[in-house]
Each structure stands twice: as C-alpha cells, then as structure tokens.
Length: 316
Image (cartoon, rainbow, N blue to C red):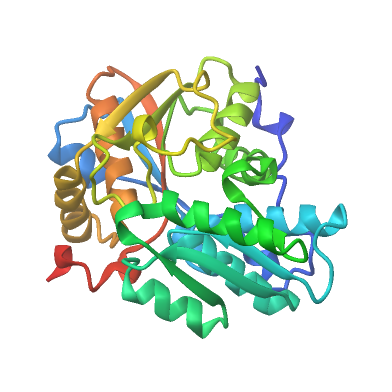
C-alpha cells in the first residue's frame, strides 16, 4: 500500500503540447454528491464522489481509452498514416475515435446499432466518421460481430477491437486511478463503475488496488438482458469482452433501468448534474453501497452528460 499522496504521480495520457486537443484528455473533476447523500439519509461519515467525465474533449470517459488505443497502435506500427481505424461502438467510443481521428488524420469506420440516439449519430457524422448501422435487436453485440467480419474481409484496416484491447483498460491505470487517488487524498474506500467493455472498471480497479489493496471494487451492470442502460452490458447474456476479468470485482450489483431514469431526473434537479443514463445507474449503485457503510469514501464514474440523450423519452 502507498501510504502518502507523494508516492504517486498523475500519469497523464497527454504527452502532446499543453495547448493541444489531446492534452485536454483526463484530469476531470471529482464532485461530491452532498444533496444526494442527504436526501437518501447517508450519514456524514460516508462521502459519495463522482468523476465528471464529460469534461473530456469529446464529452465522455471514452476519450481516455481511445487516445491510449490509438497511441499504442501507432507506437507498435499497427496504425500508420493514411490507414482507416475500424471498431464497433454504442456511441461514445466512436465519438472519441472520430474526434481523435479527425485531429490525427485517420479515416474512422464504425459499426453501431441503428437505434443509437440521433444525437450520437449526428455527432459522429459531424466528425466525418463512416457509419455502418447494425440490427438494433442485436445491440452492441451485433455491432461487434459486423466489425469482426469487416476486419476479416479487409486486412488493410486497423481493427481497434476495444473489447479485447489491453490498451483500453491500461488507459485507466495511467490516468483515471491516479487522479482518483490524488483527488481523494488516498481516502477512497470503495470504487463503483459500470461494465460495458469493462475497461474503465478493470484498469481503475487494478491500479487503485496497487495503491491500497483494501479498496473495495464494485462492478455494476443492468439487471436483465433487455434493458435501457445504453453503453452497459448484462454480462451473463452478452458477448463477454476479452479484457473482462470476472475475478476482479469484490462485489457485483445490478441496477434496473427505471431506477437509473429516476436518478437521472433527481441529479438534474437536486445536484445540477445533467448526466447520461449509465452515469445515473452508477450513482444508484453507489448509493446502495453507501447505505451499507458507517463510514467511507465511495467514488464512481459518470461516463458522460445527458446532452446526447435529449431525444430519449426519458426527457420528454
């Protein structure tokens, strides 16, 4: 266990000039959810903090993984000037790829379910990404299958393969976890994050446990295969990401879509935080953890804000 904050340094993903786009990835704020805690009768000795990942340039936590995947592929020669980057996405990772691809001169080709929010599709097109829309009934798994087929048919593509790319989770060992450790002054006791690719949970947990093995890591996922928590996977029924380590979580919790919707409204009206649905689900899970504690510091990730979901019936 590292006993002092001085024993850790922030390993920023940005080695580019300070005034560059890429240098803005990471170092997002950590916000204490005081009103949420009070409203749900959490004692003062238990603090709930949320990392506001929409402060990243493209608006989500996925900027971290996308940047590290691209830089790693460039370093090992897999991604070279003039090549096309291919991957599947439910939206946010694709937006991060498209933003960085535009900045670095890569064409970006993405498979995503056709029921992705109109806002996400519009943003992807604005960045110049080529979109291949897949069967909405097959969800993100269907997009993965199509991406694999495209990669097999055209070896000239760089298939980023976020679900099986270790550079995904390593982004969070380099940045997310050290940031949380520093921002909580090493006081974090519980870490809660949702499972999609599992990169955020995996990388952050592994590094936090190097700082302090006693930190409890809680993985959150939807309660059923048929859910409305966009970006999250119901692992028992989904194509499991290759980077997902089932032995890593200290506990697993589930959240119902209805709970997340209610929390999204609550956070907007009581904390002034307009968050995405998976972010709201993370707060639900964090509250449930906090309710079991007499004291502690619970930290969760808010992957994005709500602006990509304005067309969702949740806000009508």
